Length: 423
Image (cartoon, rainbow, N blue to C red; front, side, top):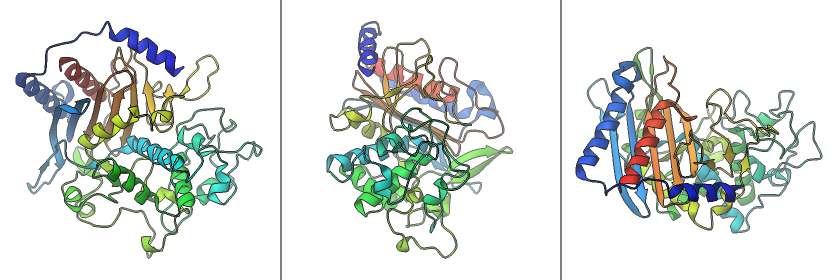
């Protein structure tokens, strides 16, 4: 299927229009569009945002890096501007990094993506109605494990992830493992726990080592991020009852030196045993990085080492109805129509495509007032990353005019495409 998608996208590239190289007036105009988006879609202050950032690369070259708005909002006057270098929480874009780390470990022989997770975890992980079907790490990374999200898909220290799976309210769908796609964050808590159990090392340290090897100052829940980068990081806001309200990474967190971990009173991270609870480090969404980091990182998906993450994706079949195309209660229908291992695919052949003429591979994110995405052309050399912070909790976020993304994201997707076409 993916070969057919890429072949169609390659044919359509011939119809795409090229434009002259990006000029300084163009850059000024693009910066102005970011500023206008932050000020409020259509001039409506109800749609004002805390910030927006966009980085576009062609090959190794950064052809545009711009930002508008604030990384920190201080009523006392100590605001900090958002920039392409600012680190912040990327939400579900993080899943791409989890899958890349898992593939690295598999390539090194540390774990098997197709082994029964029960054997890796050390306790039975079975769908109660399909006990004869093993659940694998490949299924967890691809959201075909039969697991759906419970009310809380994390367990605070010193809790064990096993408690999220067992009991009468065990979070399993009616479908057998491997038969159905349903986007679920808990899959990534299980994946992180399995990686810990297989290696004896904490997930945050495994991921930080992989990110460092890629030349990035980034990590999960601030673990592995340099102190200066953390100090200058961004707080994520929502506008609640008309006021900018911190949602995650307030000033106290940015000035701390320890990983951000949800824990019960008296619990210590130093006492944690790897393999018990990978949810501690927010593998589903806790990556802290900059837009520049993500634009560089997503390009690695085109490397032969990581091609298996997207070469054979689950693809939604409207006839068989083999999965759900939205995250329950979060995303619009149609956002998930092709998914590999921690990687979304956005086919470019439809009129409603996020990037007409080209299939994109990467991941989107939505949490704590942030909308984000990091994408690379499957058949080209353009990569880009964007984020929007400070989405208003008091109003419905406007849907896109032609895509399954929000209108805010659609504006940045369109701008990224214009910039890439002009280079």
